[in-house]
Length: 66
Image (cartoon, rainbow, N blue to C red; front, side, top):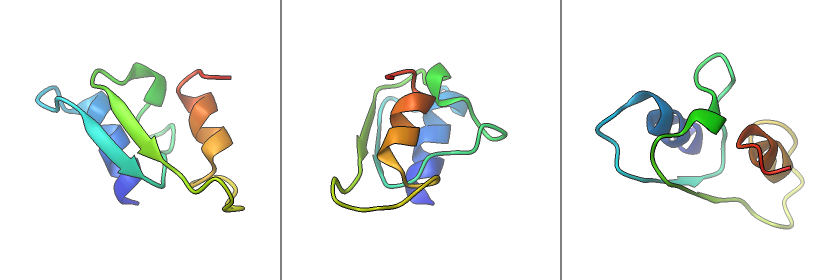
């Protein structure tokens, strides 16, 4: 959840200069990750098999890195 909040803050809080997220992406209802105004460094476990909220593939797609 902290990662999702970090990424959302990069979209929603103008005073944020950069974020480092460890797992989690915000729902599209909260924030559109592709609209991040601050640099985002996101960390996900390469061998973890999470789907959805903590899925690195979903995270890449949400930022438009297909």
